[in-house]
Image (cartoon, rainbow, N blue to C red):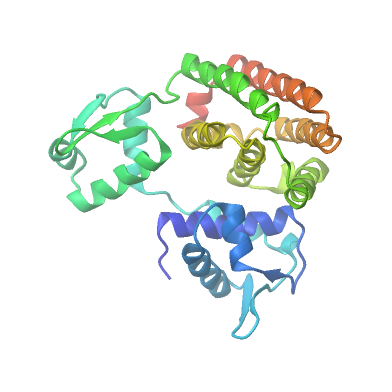
Length: 299
């Protein structure tokens, strides 16, 4: 079965969630619940589950639905295989050219089709994905304008300063309300990372679990603009953060800090939660910006 980029991502995230939640063989994989947790419609979830049946990770009962075929702890090889799936080469080339500053801010489709030797449909597919991630927008006619992205150490630091101003504010929102079921799920996932997951999880799984934590808290803020901003930042961070996730030890430390923030939220001490979030982001900024060549590692 040939999957689209979205369907591949959903399959990877289903396996990642199963591993983070330490699911056992026979546990039910509800399509609606998976769609909600991953943030997609049920259609790509259904395709991804059927693909995982082919891979031997999931079984399907026509009357009862989908179930895990083996303990999640036995899915390491499948997780690695899904993470090793090559991304869209055109998307990667455009991202590389933007990071290297060899692609101008304003482009048109005809020039890009010639430059990359691709059809208009293939180009638009890649540009539509980039548009969804928030670093390009349509211009007049067949033109596209690239938006600011994390393409330098300064831009990387700016992104952290922005998040430090934004995310603690979300925790202090007057509409903030944590979902207790989601809170328990986040705790299980972060504890699994602390207790050894940081060693066994793939770099993509580590980044996605981090992203899921921050996006969930933004959703709880009850502020749609904070939620949209955090999701957009996570999208543009992917280009440099996957490489960062290969450095595993800091991921354990980050998960410990995540658990402390969740404990403060559970105790309804939002001032403490906001303070811990600010310290968490400041620490990540200092560690990543000043001690790592993120753009070399992300290449």
